[in-house]
Length: 235
Image 1: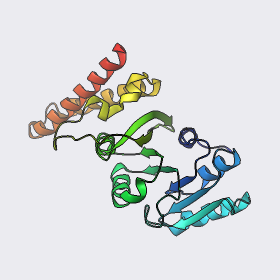
Image 2 (image 1 turned 180 degrees about the vertical axis):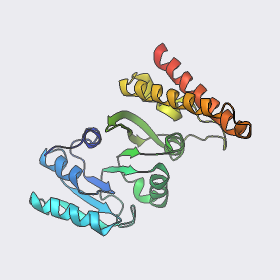
Image 3 (image 1 turned 120 degrees about the vertical axis):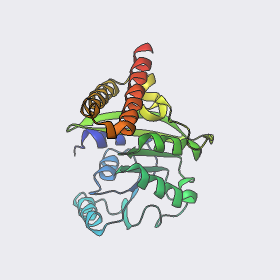
């Protein structure tokens, strides 16, 4: 079976031999693929919705893998016990939802060896949250698929980093320290697109006196993008 580019990148970050827990498993493609390719010995596929979980069960049964991949109806990590998995995967949901799941399930979260996360929104805040709870990003990828950019990160236990509340996000928090260091080709594409969006918005706001605050916000965002491009080019 074949995965999308995004799910292939997620699959590529799972450590061979680890037991997988897939939260928000949707159709269950990821655990089936990983088991069929002998990367994982088994998995627990969980979703908060009955519909997707039912489709995952059907897909698992199609390959005769019911013995190796268990399905559970669960809101986040609620139906999971400590030590039931080695790798936690969460993909296809927003950063705030992921943050809620990881905060509410903190005890279970800490029992994993690694997490592979693909948040779809609020990236700077989510990256800061990950470092504040004591996890360290060891691998990052950025996938462009069907016109959308999908950031993916692999994190392991690290040191908690305190950040002063309200302090501005760093370039690394905004765009990914490892993506910048490795001069990821898709990141450059993303930065150029963001620069174009900022310029387009500023052009529209130019003659709108009531939008000065919004104009300042966009100028700051534009400067952050330019700083990231400068770092990208200087490495």
